[in-house]
Amino acid sequence: MAIAVKRTISLPPDLAREAEEIARIEGKTVSGVIQDALRVSRAARLRKELKGIQGFWSRKAKERGVLTEKDLERYLRK
Image 1 (cartoon, one colour):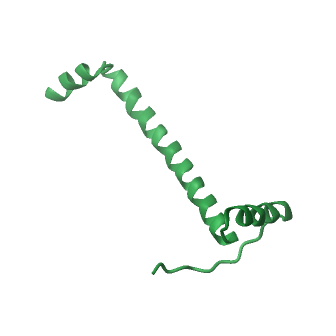
Image 2: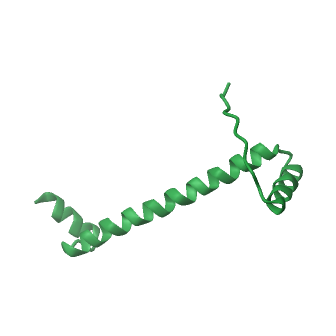
Image 3: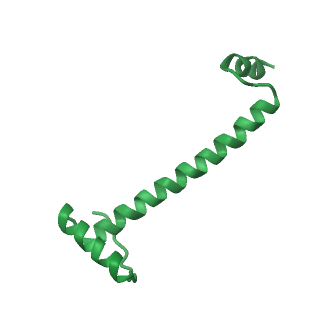
């Protein structure tokens, strides 16, 4: 069984109503709706971080003339 940590949060009235409506429509608790929103936010943040890392290494590869998989194979054999 998962352990839950209780926290009290404050939401503006419009977000509170929206969370309650989503919970009703999806048959979840408001807590479940907030958990889902946090998971989506975390996934988006991680995707953004990954794109940044990919961009960094892509720039480094281009600086070294590694533009194709064959270039990469040659570079790694050195």
